Image 1: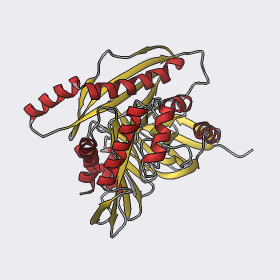
Image 2: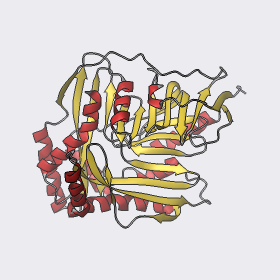
Image 3: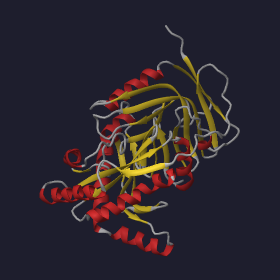
Image 4: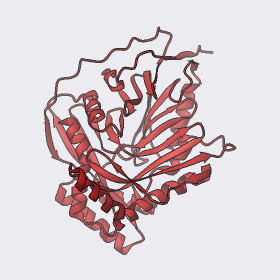
Length: 406
């Protein structure tokens, strides 16, 4: 029988900025407001696809855990071995799972390091060396803005004539550089400009999502639903008035209700009780405001087989990134959206050996392939939508990645 591989978690006395620690060796991130996890070096990596991708991911993760001898003196969520995962929106596209060699975490003033192997505790230092600044050439994506507006109009027509209530249509931009793109620079820029979002990176997918799809912590489950958006002007008084108009907007409230209902219905079978607030709050980000609702629940203790993979299979895709009814909306997306989403709008985040973890929806993001990055934005289309306004909203949602690259 092969010997087990040591995995060690130990407390750190110093609190270095997480995003400044990342090396250029397969950097991974899940950081919000300075807290979270970063990792680098790939101990093991695999890809899954198909209708059973969540079950296949679980199987692979558990097979890896059987190889480890875990020594954890910290005993917090995110200590011990950690799996970073980025799932595709469409089951037929590739999802990526990575176990990093080194993970550094920070939460509520506590920091720790986890490493795989029998070597001494790795030394940490702020990473100064970066790839040279890239110069970007911006171009249209899979569709021109005019073509995308025609697709939005077609979706509105389908809503008016069929059982479809809402569909989320995404668009992309292709950005080229004369040299390789450094993930770490983008992460630092996003962390500086959007500290209230989750700054993520998994296998070249990098972004800043405001939407937490699933948090599991000691038997409690939380999901933050965002649907309904308005751009900010930068004028505080004007933005307060816009926030109030968003909170009263029948179109946005309708879109939000669909999304909340889909998440609450997905969580209900796994929970003894769920809490769904009567009305959303307005979440203020640097560039936009969203209607937001936090759905929470307590997992049924007798259902030991329920884990993050089980819940993800029911939660994804939610109405916030697909539409209502989901089965009809997903077919409309395939038929008229006109691009491959890849891992955009799929679950992204981390899980530990206890089953705790956090996964968001991969929004406000881009996929890097050496000298190219494809960035994405999507809009919820309902009967009251207007193609020109949806284009404006999508441009606002491109802003985080635009500013992080520039």
